[in-house]
Length: 251
Image 1 (cartoon, rainbow, N blue to C red):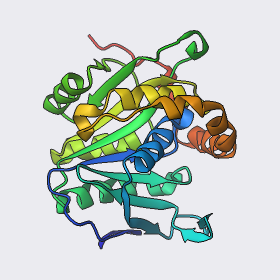
Image 2: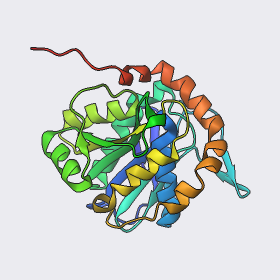
Image 3: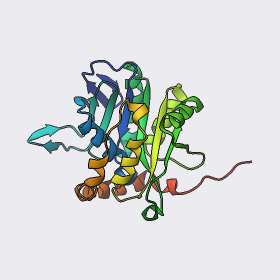
Image 4: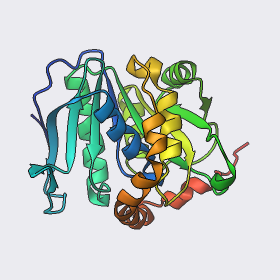
């Protein structure tokens, strides 16, 4: 168990040493959520913990008659995954970000990698979304770029919990990275999630067939439309629209 402020992480992880933590919270296009939930299923990851906080709404998820926590932790041979059923509430973003990095350090998890979408206004015209990486330090950015074959994000904004995780990682000297695929802003995008997964084999230690994800894309969009609506509402509170802008250039 790990505690910081009003956030508590309960787990019974067998051994986190050297593993990578994949975070997939609802965000742009639900790309991270779709990708991580698909990996949890296909890699048969074990549920090993959950996050609790008085900043979470008084809600539980019900799956196959089982009561489930909203933010859950899963473990496999090479990776640990963190998945949320709901958008992360604004007041929870900072304490949860700090606690995730603290918790990963405690378990000697070597790297934290956030999977998400990068809003692209012309997404409908793009058949194969580009994938970008950025990290809390130059060394880890270079590692992610070489391991995934993705481009480095040179200019732009990142908002929300992924931004906070990057800041915490940079300030603590921890390896925290974000991998982004071009995506619809407020429409579930399984195609972008599939592109992310295609770039992950060297990160997670194995290839995963994305064909089932692409074949069920329309069903996933329908299933996740309510979550996307709630996520779109929460994105306004954390200024996710800033990600559509380029930052000013300082000479």
